[in-house]
Amino acid sequence: MIEKVNLAQKFALFNDHWSPKVTGRVNDFEVKVVKLLGEFVWHHHDNEDELFLVVAGELTIEIHDQPAIHLSAGEFVIIPRGVEHRPVAETECHVMLFEPAGTLNTGSAPDSAFTVTQPDTL
Image (cartoon, one colour):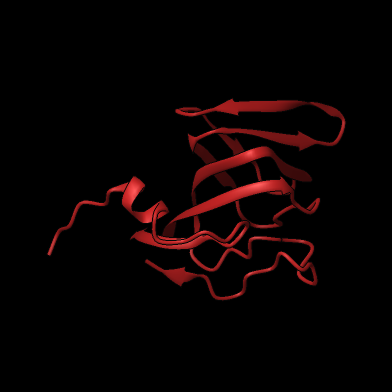
């Protein structure tokens, strides 16, 4: 059965930060939602590009040797594989992620306290 997804309803189902939730699948990719607040860990993904779409709030993506990328609601950025980055949200930010299934949220920093190995499905 084909079902629509209401992002506001999905975001209302949880309160934790930095813990992605799977809301759908497209071929071999997962659509995830996550609430962000504060600074994440510096990391990169060896094999995956990563799309950050800001649904609510504002997000900064820090990248070594490049100006930070500031995103507002309705904007997205694709971080290419291998690029070291760190998301930072000064206030709570709601983000949708689109990435290959099984992508570890902390990439090259798997021992981080932020690591989620099995994201919940909403």
